[in-house]
Length: 145
Image 1 (tube, rainbow, N blue to C red):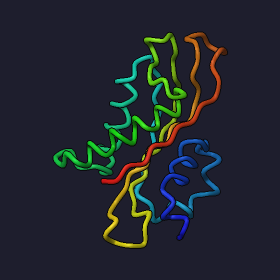
Image 2 (image 1 turned 135 degrees about the vertical axis):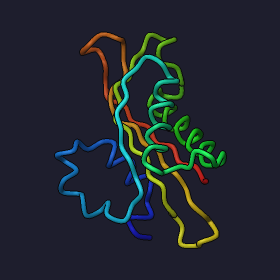
Image 3 (image 1 turned 120 degrees about the vertical axis):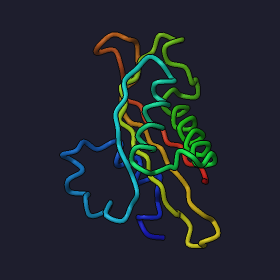
């Protein structure tokens, strides 16, 4: 299995590394369909919307194909569970997040019949809505399309 088939690993790298750090990794991402973004909020819906908007704007999912939006949603929710340590609430529990995210779409299996999958990775901070009281967090979700 090649590194380009490890969509989760690619998503985590893209989300966790700064633009400067990513420079030396550019060759790894030549044949990968991906996009990146940032979101900071106390509102879970804003996090979900930011990822969905980025995926649509960058052509990773087709707006008119429900199964693609549905797959992305489940990958996002799985990633958020990692970010929030299994308690998928932010503002309701007086927490805020500042996250970078990456979305990678690909074929992680050699067998063509396994189809395409989508990975969403988050990296950033979570904590009380007071600057300096947050800590690092990471989450990854992968779903078949």
